[in-house]
Amino acid sequence: MEDASPATRSTSLIITLAAIVIVLAGVKYAEAIISPFLIALFISAISGPAMFWLTEKKVPAGLAVSLIILSIIILGFFISSILGSSLQNFSDKLPEYQSRLQEITQSIAVTLSQFGIHLELEELRKILNFGKVMSFVSSTFNQVLGALTNIFLILMMVIFLLLELSCFSFKFKHISHNPAQTMARLGHISGTMGRYFKIKAFTSLITALPIIVVLTIMGIDFPILWGMVVFLLNFIPNIGSIIAAIPVILLALIQFGFLAAGEVALLYLLMNSLIGSFLEPRLMGRSLGLSTLVVFLSLVFWGWMLGPIGMFLSIPLTMTFKIIMDSHENTRWVSILLNNE
Image 1: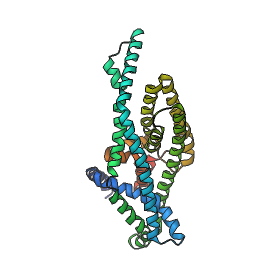
Image 2 (image 1 turned 30 degrees about the vertical axis):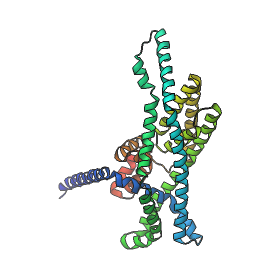
Image 3 (image 1 turned 90 degrees about the vertical axis):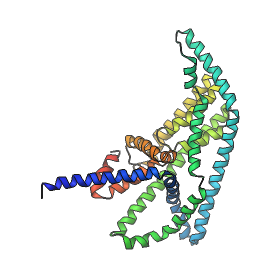
């Protein structure tokens, strides 16, 4: 029997891995359904504390949910209206920007040729292609907005999830072998998600506001648009701030030349260094608990699985997975591998 034990463990591991692959394949296939559900789930997790606070103040559950949904609708309408109008105005001026960038590209090629550096003009234009950069940014937002098109379904799921929050403890007492431990685990997941989103929203806001002010002073077109792009893309770890900076640097180059482009690049580098490398890690403390490599790999993996929605939710999804793995002795090694220590 002792000789069969390692074989049994190996078989169990293979079956577990095969089950994970099957589940992930199902998630990938059902992306159109999974993405709205995940959005609703995380909105509910963030809104849960507000829901409990209102009910503790003797506000009826139905009215509390209505107030939260109304706040979400107003905020979403405000963001989408400003972003939509700004993107439309920018698209109208894009041909003018592209024409100016081609002139700059040609002058760069001429200047380099004087120093004996010969570059193909078409290759240089491919590198400095404002249209492709903005089409990438626009496609990212369009895919996110595409997942939000079924807003009625998302709001309905949020409503029912919030209404069910008060019943969870009662239900888990009957279906769980250890209700207190299960509720503590769910509370830990919800609290971690809420803390992450609050800190991330705060740091994204204080990154975006100075950028809007400085871009306005410099005279860069559409400063509010770029500030909103910074705010939203900062939720994508590692590469979000880079994607947000590239179109603004190119626009500064088009409008005012290389010096202004360098100043804008320095502005973004300074803000992201102060906020992303100094302030945010101190506010997050040990709550994130993910190594830098895991953060990057989770971005790639969830982005592949769920598109831009997966990129925005890569950290919360990975943290949730880590907490679940840490709650069982047999899977705790996975949580240790994901940890930053």
